[in-house]
Length: 142
Image (cartoon, rainbow, N blue to C red; front, side, top):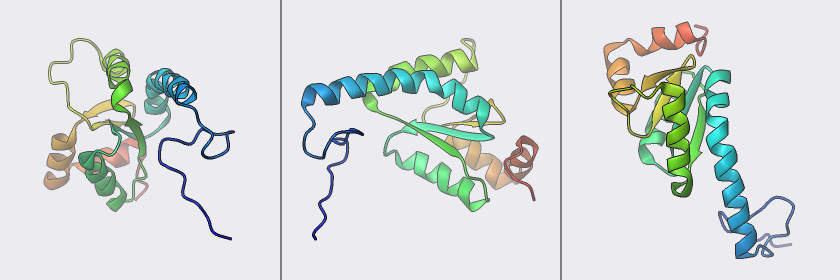
């Protein structure tokens, strides 16, 4: 028996592969976008480390690999381009409107609070400050 690959992004749970209409795909994308933007705050509050980044972003991958290298298993929230503005609105609500130095994606939350972007993660890693911050947030038990 030969297996067939399902094209990425065309599979909707509960439908047979290859039987996805474009309208069904559009409806699912709209539902995922709404659910996604609303669930950012929940993910951040429930996890010691959360990384929010664009789907397929290499810098998000770098942050994730760095954290995994330290023994942290971060929750990664990938944002589709179509829903990026909705997620940014939710992030602004979570962080606060007065945030001067808004980081670019990926955005990293540690202990339910904004930690920063890639530059802050790398700078604290290089200076040796990252591990104590992760320990304090409960992401590391060493």
